Amino acid sequence: MFVKTGDKVKVIAGKDKGKEGTVLSVNAKTNRIVVKGVNKIKKHEKPSQANANGGVVQKEGSIHASNVKVIAKKEDNNK
Image 1 (cartoon, rainbow, N blue to C red):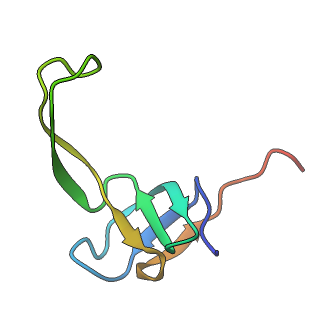
Image 2 (tube, rainbow, N blue to C red):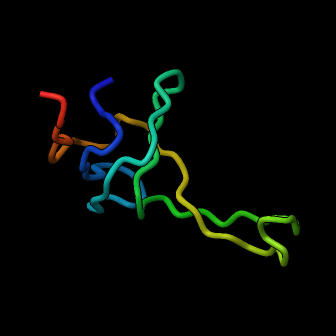
């Protein structure tokens, strides 16, 4: 896959076209990625120990990797 976690990407297709963000996670099996600040979805959560009140939470949803282009690669510190 051409995108890795930490890369800066720009969305080139879909409802968030033109937005930029960093890649938070990559799923190579389904070819989908999660980009910070892009494709916000609302999820209803039940009360739990971590979230005592529950309620509606906004988080990033995944988008297909073909809908983004890489602007800047993450610098490797291992070299």
